Amino acid sequence: MPNISARSKAAPASPIRRLYPLARRAQQEGKKVYHLNIGQPDIPTPKAFLRGVKEADIDVLAYAPSPGLDVALRALESYYADWGIELREEHLLVTTGGSEAITFALNVTCDPGDRVIVPEPFYPNYLGYARLTNVEISPLTTRREEGFHLPPLSEMEQLIDGRTRAMLLSHPGNPTGVVYNEQELANLVELALRHNLFIIADEVYREFVYEGTHRSLLSYPEVADRVILVDSISKRLSACGARVGVLASRNAQLMEAAKKCATIRLSAPTFGQLGLAAFLADPNYRELIKGMIREYQHRRKVLCDALHEVPGLTFRRPEGAFYIMIGLPIADAEDFVSWMLTGYPGQETVMLAPGEGFYATPGEGKDEARIAYVLKEQDLLSAVSALKEGLKLYHVAQQAPTAA
Image 1 (cartoon, one colour):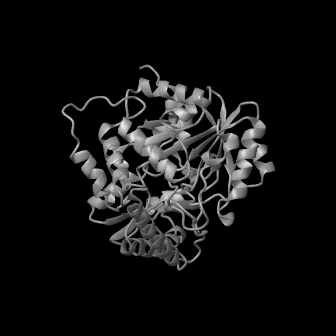
Image 2 (image 1 turned 90 degrees about the horizontal axis):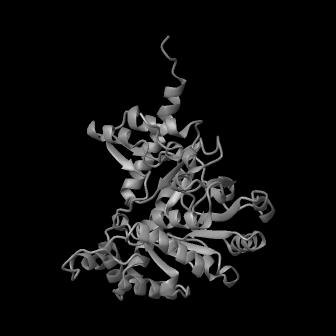
């Protein structure tokens, strides 16, 4: 039988979804599983978005233009202008989710074997996108006890070599909830200028800020030619299944190359673009987003207050997004998460995302897990209750003698 490609073999399985078969089996056995492993919001998708899909005035569901529908591009221009980010149509490309935008960004900034600096822990699919584009990740390790903020400029600079082409980061952070401050952003800008690097800025969670403020890297004029914005409507509109994202840059040569990638894949989903345009045309859309953010801020408080009551568990309160990385009082988080789905005796259990898969550095994150606080208050409390009891019983199970 012919061999499959080396890059596909090297692509990692998702730590967020890898244990799903265990969760499915637990559910089939009658258990309630609280899914805190995946960033799938339970907040209803806005009606304005759904109306844009249901009331679409089309006779034939044809290909959309490769860069995006005109109505979607105009709506995006207006949206970014409200954030003080002036972009014209030629600066924008509608993509099939933020995932495709990152893949395009890697393809147009890097050749095979080039390197991209990524603060870890990071969204694990970054590693998958890199492997499939033959790009190497240079991990920049950040620490839980420091709130996952960036290290000094001198430490970041040590990772740069002749093959380094870009930095890729999420801001606010997934999985950490970090919101970078002005000094950290200024350091990134200086690094990009000093070493002629691109910055791929994944700003999907820009509205989800509870402490500090968010400043887009596109707002720095000195790096206008090297910042690539990645965006998505999945979380902001609670519309993960729409698969509509954005790649934006003021670099004309880069956008020309990215739009070549877009023609190869033909077009992004038409219905998702129509829904987005209808949502952004709703005069109340800003208030709808603010209401969603208030709900996540409340959930953050509920979750953090409950986690403080779990013995041995450590964390820093996240500043943005809707994730938190926790330190567990155990050696192997993946083994614990698996046990919660297969060995925990309670009728209600919880599924977390083991932390090791959010790192590229071997051995990092083994005692960590990511929680997505995307469930309503009572579900979060029930999930933490199961986690607390599970840790106690897991310790007992680990200490029990094994049969000869």
